[in-house]
Length: 218
Length: 218
Image 1 (cartoon, each protein chain N blue to C red):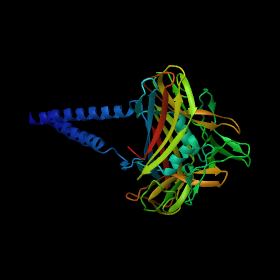
Image 2: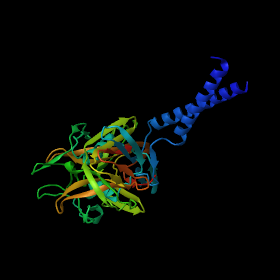
Image 3: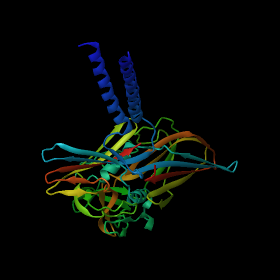
Image 4: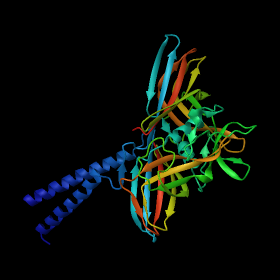
């Protein structure tokens, strides 16, 4: 085989490779996108009222990590004939979510209104396998809520307010739901946790923590 | 000389494109602190011998108002029987999701054995308020669920397989669950529905269709 032939084959192969790569770059195969994107995002809003200066600060963090527990609860809630997957509660125990009611029916049940918001002083990077805050300072059940919609967009908010009688450095927050794992047993399962720049609170200060779930919005 | 130049230029361009493609794929797998959940619909059509005929990945399956309301009720509902916590059943009626026995706390009980993926041939565009398919053809109980973690990315999958004994044109797909409520008994409700009427799927007698919902966290 002479050099010219090698050259021609080389050129042909290069163009084939170019065409194939071009297709991959320009249009990934099999994918079709909608404008609404079937997406929900979680926004963490921290409002700190400094009682000494009378000034309020507002921090908005679009990046609260959704945990593996949350994914499991979504799957378990709509599991049909499939087997259950265990979640890890805030005590670190692996629990099978269920509530058994007479009549031989198995349910996945949540203690409605039992969800909690946590604040803490841990600074370790959040990980999907987190099941508790690194260093919890306080937790409190959801105090207020809201729902609004516009077009195909839907926002739901849950919020609670913490007051302080000592000074703390707040660097992490989390959200849990209360899951049954027996007829009368239920415990907190963390579904979101994230860290943020330190917020220094003093006695008398007020910190309102709000989670906003924005559905069908990019 | 000219051919050699073309060959070298083509090879160089190929290497650049290959590098770009490699960089892009690394970017999409780089763990990052996320804050969102995207719903993906994967549809695989096979013939009666199991040969894959078609595979689609559809980003953008609409999350319905019911899904947001369900999570709001789980987190905040409690003993408050307010309209904001109601879900819309498949008949279009607003229903409370709560179960509360005489000596029991208020809970939200999802009947695990009764979650279905539903196919239809209706052409109505999906809207946030949808509570039913436009024209249901058939439903199959969810057959498998799974959760996987790669870095900070967590996927929950909910899947089932349909087998057909006639030809159909699928134009809409939905996901529904069932609540056991104290005041309304059991009722079904949709959490996702989307229309694929702009690019419907036609199945033949003997074909199978595996439909998988992927809730992609972070």
